[in-house]
Image 1 (spheres, rainbow, N blue to C red):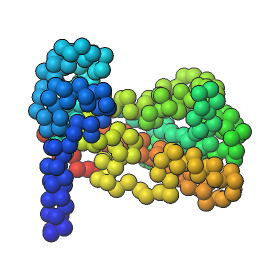
Image 2 (image 1 turned 120 degrees about the vertical axis):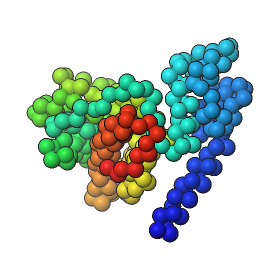
Image 3 (image 1 turned 180 degrees about the vertical axis):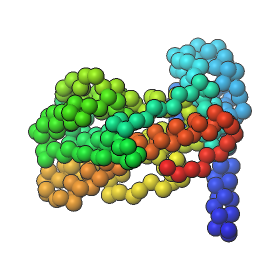
Image 4 (image 1 turned 30 degrees about the horizontal axis):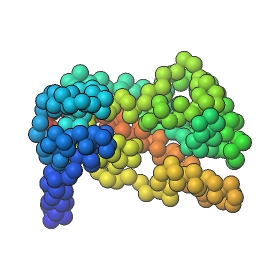
Length: 293
């Protein structure tokens, strides 16, 4: 009981300390936006959380470059709701018209590791998890032994999608990342819907997090129980692959594959959590969600 109460007290202290954080800690608030909000008198999370999105939007568009910097009311609403979410330490729906994901057996979740390039990206690890009837993912991975094999693993990945009859694939940030780079090499398989959960989930719900990166979201929904791996970022995965090319250390190869596959699992768990969260919040917007998935 003592440890439980101590944990609650620690969380409460952390949430309380967020009130005076600068608005630059909010996702979506970079230098230009922070400066404009500061000039309007909003310096801290608490100040932003107390204003209505509509009032703030009206204040913004009265400035000379307000619409250029913030573009839309929904952008302002996200910022205000995220501030409130951080101070209350719970998710908030941005709209009552929220749509769950229709997850079914045969759907797929995927993630890739690659060396970015304006015209010729090099993929060196691709993982896909196909949802089974028992609710688990059957994960397959392709690994390039060198950069020249990038085209080969893309071809094999595409063939797998077509042979498996996959109709919908979910990723995180894949619209501007994975898919954009795939298209530079070869057109994506036709007849498949590619759903970027980053762009599907975050316009519907805000979370009490300072970052919208995959691992930050996953860490929140699992109560900071993210698995520890030898590789912890795409940048480090690329560095590890370059080291593998020199050493052919199978341990390094396995670390890259495990990191890639873990990202696939994270995307799936976030999708499950999203469906659960909106089902709860639609019934009770003040409900605190404590389930681990």
